[in-house]
Image (cartoon, rainbow, N blue to C red; front, side, top):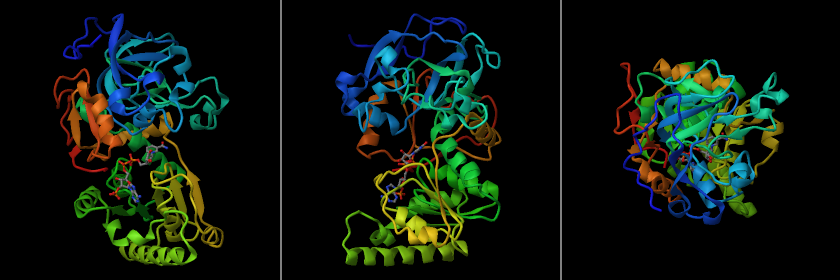
Length: 418
Ligand SMILES: NC(=O)c1ccc[n+]([C@@H]2O[C@H](COP(=O)([O-])OP(=O)(O)OC[C@H]3O[C@@H](n4cnc5c(N)ncnc54)[C@H](OP(=O)(O)O)[C@@H]3O)[C@@H](O)[C@H]2O)c1
């Protein structure tokens, strides 16, 4: 049965009461494949909040690459994880802004009507790691709207109360829904994992991308100097506007990219290009970087290890160009460099990072806002690499710009990230 999305923004119940059903974009195992086919609109039961849970009316949602993987069912089926076996469906979406609609037993910090943004880390509060180590170390740790269902591409989403953060009042719904996953990840990488300090020199790969735009801004406000790697002068100008001291266009160093399987001669030539790149970085920063901000993986990792200064840190959270990393380890041990893995952020980091947004010290960077009918299409754009930056989806909001209740600079509009 075709689902009518024209009424997506109207809810018949008042905060505190949930309608029996809601409209959602649903992925099911039997239709894993291209996002345009895998995402289908369905009318589905509205989830009730359990203990320490909250159901939020989604006003806007953010699009991330994780739900391209969820649609494809690759490299693993999300249906094996979290609460998927219980419900048998996947409602994706790991970024949202919205209104608390109903709170479950035990929730005291939030009440129906509160305006919130949502961070995407879920963990069982019963795991001891949560109480003294870090929720990211807990065996129950999951990314909401990817490894769990009830994500943000629906009229309502079910989350743990600890995932809620106050919505920055000067941002519209779509601006507020656009930054959580990438920004909080960049915050943990730099502020906690790599202990960014004033005066540090930082090299940022993909500096105009989803993570990079926040890494650059964090360096600026921390009093560190950042040089960003980008693939066009337009992106370079954007990151200078965000606070980078300069940029390097990677097209001028194509030969440094590691493909894997290079012959000894090819590797020698590649290494020479990496050295030339490192020299350019040092010239721009006035010295070798204390920190390299990595998420590209195979293509750039040998260069990252080479570039970072003795005792410096390469912090990595992803591997867009390939997971199998291959580098000359002598440059690591002889110069006592460190490689640090990082994954999303905990609630404390998300809270501290969100405060910087509330203070307008960090600004979201948004490319396009689309209607709820475009959820499948927007993921196909990412899949086909036809996007030019961050996409937000209007769900409860009927137009861009709604939801601002205070003056402030809002998001930077830019074509970035592709
Ligand atoms: N573990 C976590 O919690 C976490 C969280 C968020 C993201 N991630 C991962 O981190 C990666 C980046 O995420 P994102 O949101 O920043 O993606 P994005 O918006 O697509 O930006 C990544 C940027 O990296 C650059 N890039 C891509 N391929 C490259 C290559 N072969 N060599 C050099 N640069 C390359 C591109 O910039 P230029 O073309 O301008 O160079 C691109 O814009 C993804 O793999 C994502 O899955 C992990």
